[in-house]
Length: 96
Image (tube, rainbow, N blue to C red):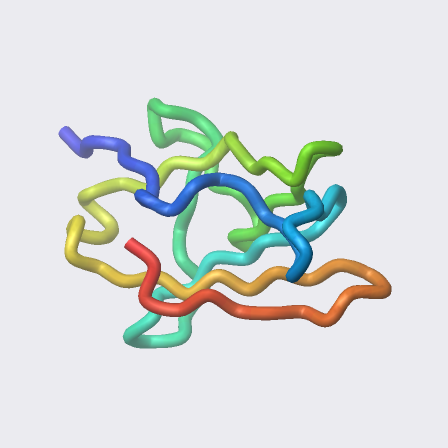
């Protein structure tokens, strides 16, 4: 049976001044291949998040995602891209 997990990275996005980025879109990719990562919205791993993208809330948080150890072992690295209108988009690489 697959086990859900989340990345050790805090589920929070901020700008270069530390201000929360509300409404930013965070997209998950597999670092090694560049392919969109399969992420789920529930701990039961039954509902895939379309486009592997989550929008942050008013506090810059994105809490509702899970990754399956059947899809990716814990040693897998991910790349996260963050996009928000009127902000320079950025990436975080080798996230685990």
